[in-house]
Amino acid sequence: MGYAQLVIGPAGSGKSTYCSSLYQHCETTRRTIHIVNLDPAAENFDYPVAMDIRELISLDDVMEELGLGPNGGLMYCMEHLEENLDEWLTEELENYLDDDYLVFDCPGQIELFSHVPVLKNFVEHLRRKNFNVCVVYLLDSQFITDVTKFISGCMASLSAMVQLELPHVNILSKMDLVTNKKEVENYLNPEPHLLLAELNQRMAPQFQKLNKSLIEVVDQYSMVSFIPLDLRKESSIQYILSQIDNCIQYGEDADVNVKDFDPEEDD
Image (cartoon, rainbow, N blue to C red; front, side, top):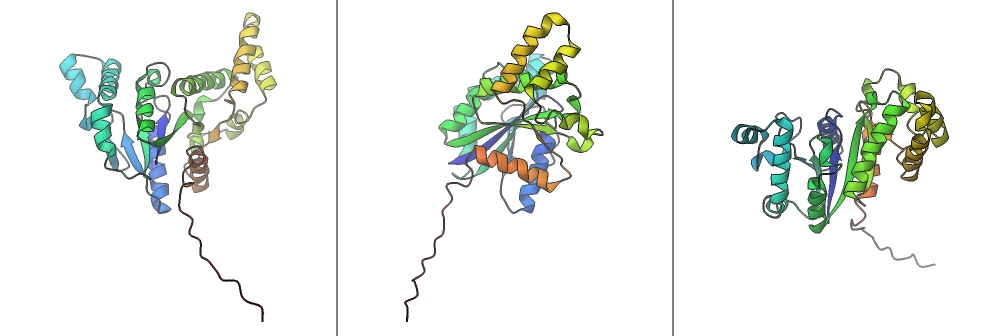
């Protein structure tokens, strides 16, 4: 069985930085992971690229040959990837052993994990190849400054959860850049009734029923829980990695070495 993280989130949320820091952490702890680039527009990497979608198709080529813009060109590239799952991806996966650990660094176009079926079909292909997959959703902690932005981030993450139907770990990235950490910490494990009260204060009275429904959805799907990530702290990276490992049952199939001891005979 193989293991995989699918790293998603809005553009600029720190996905590639997360992948780079995760690779460095695992290298330090003598653990092997392989980072896969799924962004056809990516140019520079701070980590060794094990697999690269640009070997299949690149955004620059699509924009030049088809006259598409950046967003349309990227969607074309991802749909081309979807059409080549049985050929390109299957062939690439054959280079890895059953217990290898892959981390897929995805593009930031939100439609890819909200309603377009490309990533859904991608992860289903991985699961058919006997991979346990966990979604890692990154949200910029600097975006979480009030309840309306928090709810917006929760809805985007929930959309990905419903679309992909996979174990899900939500991360507040860039905590090392936050100046007022108390403001962000208030949203790590907030009480639903407090969220509702704050939301009603900020919005017009006619939206109170909508606000109540939104908070109930967030609470029902346990979307009010985010894990903060501070890349300056190895303990922060390790904690998040342990949460993800638990989701995909990493290491549970490892052989246990048992040494038999003969009981000492009584004199």
